[in-house]
Length: 214
Image 1: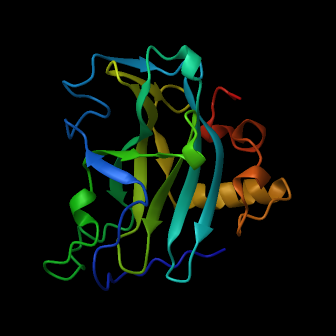
Image 2: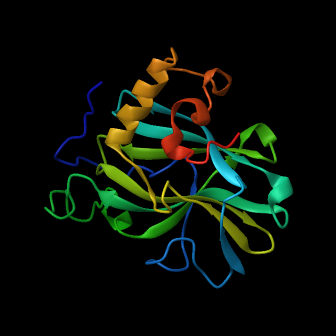
């Protein structure tokens, strides 16, 4: 499939995600802040990406839909938040070239800032969460996310899921195509697929699940 990100940004700011978004306490360090008593790697699958899909709308909205699973018995307390700590990169350097209309940032204000994109419980679940991350629309810059997934407990401990090798994940147009192709290889159409029809990342897309958690 082809992406339709225009070089000219046209109108008002579109939301970066259908999930809640809050600025991290520190703009230069992911998942940091005085409110947290400790940061740990999710080395025992405390949180992991269980399933993932992508979608595209008529307005050229391209987004990831991520399903996060938590193993609550391995956490040090009740869950406070689950999500994705990330900063946005300007994929086509539209902000740098100042092609957006004056006073109409269309996502430029997000570039380079660490934020927590919070997931929401899936149908009221206490250990399964969903998160939508927009790569852009006709009205916004093309976004590239860099970050880590997390679960944070009410005790202030944050367990972070990092990419293979301990680095950050990147969610972008290339990854969008990779997910689409990987789903197709499993005989699954990403168009309108329900979560129950999606394969587990451990079986088809281990980039987002490097420990192959289940």
